[in-house]
Image (cartoon, rainbow, N blue to C red; front, side):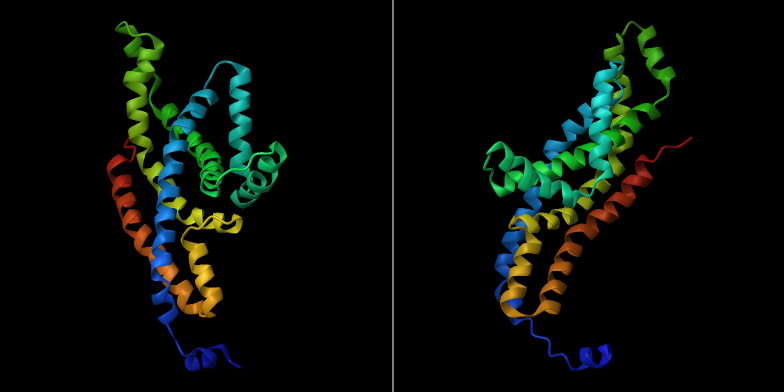
Length: 228
């Protein structure tokens, strides 16, 4: 049958989705908690790895470089599976699924944040650091008081973009049993056989959650963009 004809004769029924809406909201709470927890963990780690990348100690710089390249160059889904079904069982560790999800996402996000922070730090003119040192500051003080505040300000739009993307990436954790929004929708879909209705509502919830934040990011890009 022609797909258009099938769609025309399809009888929509959002009843099962409405009945399961409390479950979707419970999943949404988990999704938001995953995103907030991941950013809270990955931001300081990302900043630490950015400084490690810039370290003059070769071993430290090499280790940070290897970590960042590994997690940026491999799919997040594979990282989640390795952490969930590889590292944990190999070490004999039984971890709560929520904690496992935050750990997997944080390792990935921290690698990307490390490059964002490193690029922002290196974008600050070296003359500013030298001028600060000439006033009597140590190199560390110049970094913390002069360079880092400007670098963090410049990194705000890209960090915000990572934040919005993170909400969508949490859906991958459904494959290892984390009860976030997508998994709750998937379970409702299995019970009701209303694939189109269920996933349309799930997509709408993601849209309502992320689109206003996307608009905010556009404003942040305009406000904090680097001007020559």
